[in-house]
Length: 226
Image (cartoon, rainbow, N blue to C red; front, side):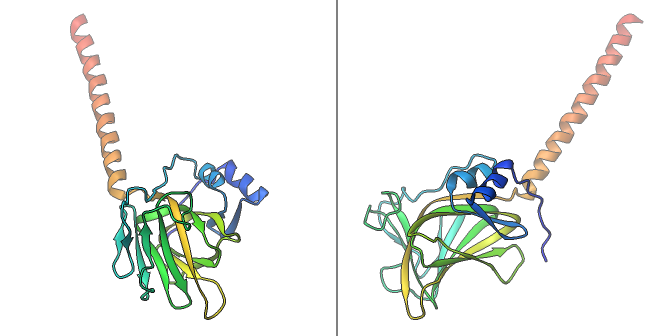
């Protein structure tokens, strides 16, 4: 079992649980169906990633497509023309702009892999025949979470243990399939150890320099009065 990371849930988290904007999937995993509640519980500013930079459709049906903080890849071969970033504002758009579109059935799914393990993920989804498989760091089996109950809904998760990836799974009847679209992806990554080390070294150097200046000042004062 991987080591659990401490994560301080804010008062906003408790309020979200009380009013039904969030529910607890397991001991260290909170799920939100409202962006404002997810953002407030996160407790820090988060600018969502949009697909607006795409001027032409781009596929992730046969190869991984990287977006910097995350990537998308297909599991199983989807039908031709599916599993792609749709650049134009078609009827399937989530909010009137470019979006990610994926084909799901019982044998084919899509994985979202985090470049660095994440403590939080959220996005706007269009489609309600989907579940989520959340893979915590070091775990081979996912935590399964029911997907959106309505055709368009926000899904967000905050975890006390780093998340390696999320798999989007079909939840409809056997033999069926669906197209699910999403946009406005929010991610909060676990701070990299190297970044924390640099900050620690800088703090130690600053403290050492301050002590040296203080001691030097005392010596200088003594010399003036001697």
